[in-house]
Image (cartoon, rainbow, N blue to C red; front, side, top):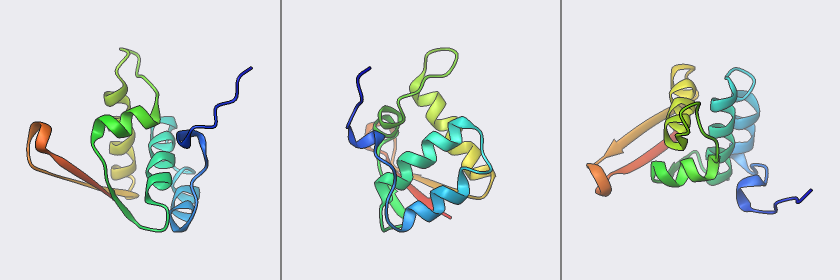
Length: 103
């Protein structure tokens, strides 16, 4: 068995770790995996701007239809509906910037 040491597999640290620890208790798997990567990316901050595709690659899971971005978007939606996350997207298509705010 090969153990990966990639950044995506490392646990969150810093201020965002407390948010992650609390948020994962209330959401399904998709929300847990998205929360882990957002907390890892935020570190000591409470917001991060990252393209959806990059976040989906970091989460690394697919839905039943084999779509990674749809799985990630569903996880973010679950976190948003539960009050743990706010998502803002400015711009359109390839020029869009998405900012995730930990609540």
